[in-house]
Length: 339
Image 1: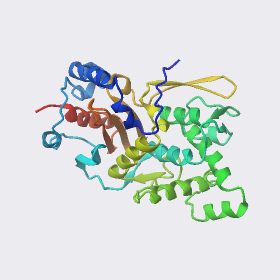
Image 2: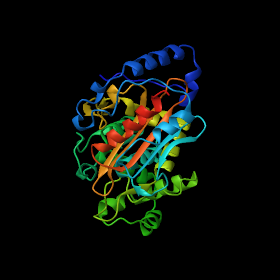
Image 3: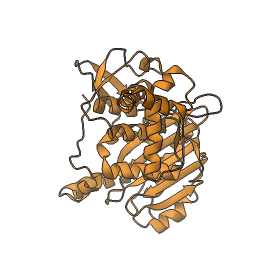
Image 4: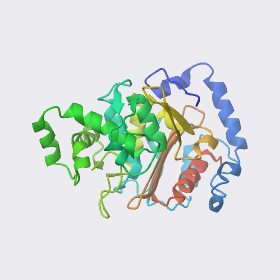
């Protein structure tokens, strides 16, 4: 079984001040100092993504170093949560396709509607989504278990099942459903089934001031050759992750795990691997989400703890399938380099 890490308080950062965390951070610091290139050996074309590093707390110095980092991404940001400081930015306000990064705002929205133990059935329509993450028609999961599985493995089936359940709660009456689809860009019967939830996703983002987000589905899959399932900016995406970590971190913290064993309500187990293979070998990473489609190219968002109650969020959009990892971890490395 995968070892589960629990955060009892709602605010993830409240935990940093507890006795014993100083020793934990010291351990992270030691790991970072000795951290070597072997962590990313599988990415042979990017040998220098991660090299031996030393912690730094001088963010003015970091900013001057990180500005010189060469990345492939069209847009990127390094966002210091503590004081909402932007340490690095490359076209941070350019609206770009999010691909599967869309699944985070989907789960954020669903968490406001569904309890952790809410039963989510895997429908025949859900398993017809692109990709196979081991889900089968007729299985039932708790919302908490299915959301963790869907984020770690980037399951389109799982996200669709959650969106279906939420849409049913939003539209118990036909007229409410018709109102949702009248403003939807859905083009298939399957997309119409989750139109009320997608509308809710857009409303939730705009309600908290993240106005550059636009969603056409819950997964981020491309609608066609010209329209993506979700759009947003690197800046607003970093702000959203910071908000989730402050208000309801449990919904995304399991993404730091390299794998998951998700139990159905009947006790069967679905095993899945994290789509970011570097989480297990990158000290301090406590959030990760990948994304890739033809329109979006390669996207990646991570949150890394510096070891001094000073976490940062790194978001890269519009890179390539492999370079998204290179880009994010080049920026990660620069954050931790000393003068």
